[in-house]
Length: 276
Image (tube, rainbow, N blue to C red; front, side, top):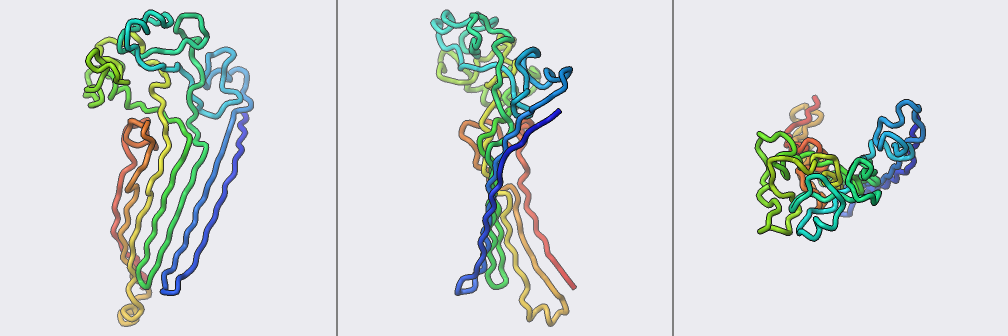
């Protein structure tokens, strides 16, 4: 097998000290990467997505997503009457696009619907120091990436997966005749419309910016160190994953771990660095 990667990375930093003694160091990096699978053994080339025949992952990014295109919900009888034949369709059910135009929703209407590889990533780091105090802040983010929000199986449906489990509160806003503008399918106890099939309904914008690190520190003055015979004594307080800014279109908890439904943990650390 062969894969081709192309991209670039740009890093820039600047450090200086002000007239009143504030030392600062600002640095950042910006990178992009595109990849595609260029060759696979003939006997396995249809094992990594596609229709199993002529439409496969060759020439596409690794782990590309293949499935149906969800085209909103059926909201009235006219939409039902003028849509392709779709087993289980009904008011409030997901409508799928008839990509090949044969008037029937089937496996042949699947296509490539997502790329889990971010197009752009960046990081920004700021270090400040004044007298015996120091401060560090680090931001990181990615852009133009598709993620699979598997939690939607639990938050948006009653019967698609694990029928006996607790469900998400999004179900309270499910489509109904009294709530016709909802984008969440109508409640049902039987998945006749095969909404468990993989489609763009489960793919969301995974862009994010995160405050990865925030740290405050204080180093004991030299006079104190000299009296105690200690070479270095610094105390600090830091926090990790303190803030996330994600896409308004993302309905999960954390796009970095969308498939699991759990956020990266926020942690706080208090410590000291002591050198004798």
